[in-house]
Length: 307
Image (cartoon, rainbow, N blue to C red; front, side, top):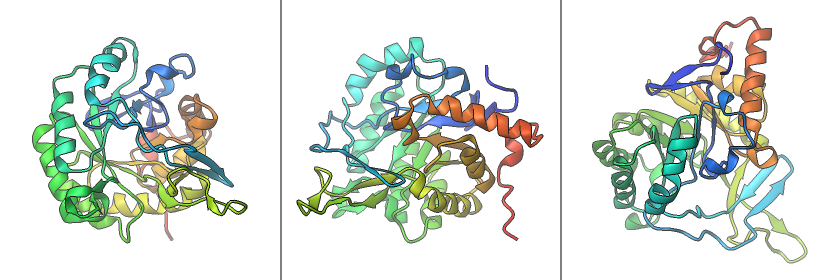
């Protein structure tokens, strides 16, 4: 077990710590059994699942930047039905931490169908909806940039889902508050933010993008200051919990997101450097609390002093 300073409840789910492994960086969980101390990890989020299997984008898919990385994996996954039949039974037996399943789609029907398949499957604690995918039924609009469209999507998902519904928001918007408010109004249980920033790396010799698909998503320490600002704005706009992510590589980084208003945090890019990062960061967070004589991590949440 982790320290008594760390256990929290998120959307009614008991977590041993507020540190969660982010989607797309921890596989389906099974791959990390020998690499992480699960007793310090609050939960993990699976790779994004779609209605049908997807091969993803052409290589190269990753490019290391000065303070992070750009990825264009293209949401490669085995599809929801294969996940339920091939991965979930092993997770239910082996994973000692709550499982959050990440879901994405290109139309509302896609999300609904994935949830429908998952609803009867055991061993799942919550869903996280990645709403940063183009909605091809509406001219390429992103759910994450249109409050009305997001309201409709979350409402449809809420009507079907019996488990907590976490909505993962994009930072690629003018203002985050209208999107957060729309998700809350439609029945979201919590929000997670931020997803990656649209970015580009160029090879000056070939004069071509360094990634096979061209543009990619920037993550890592470079985005942390902007992510912190968006967490503050979002946590002040809604009453549901906010899960913060974006460049967290240490326990003090995690503490900053909690101070900004997050109830929990997700660790993503750091896992590419060190797969044990979530447990290490939770341990460092506990040490920070101890050094600051803070009895419980909840005492940090939303304590930012702007003046």
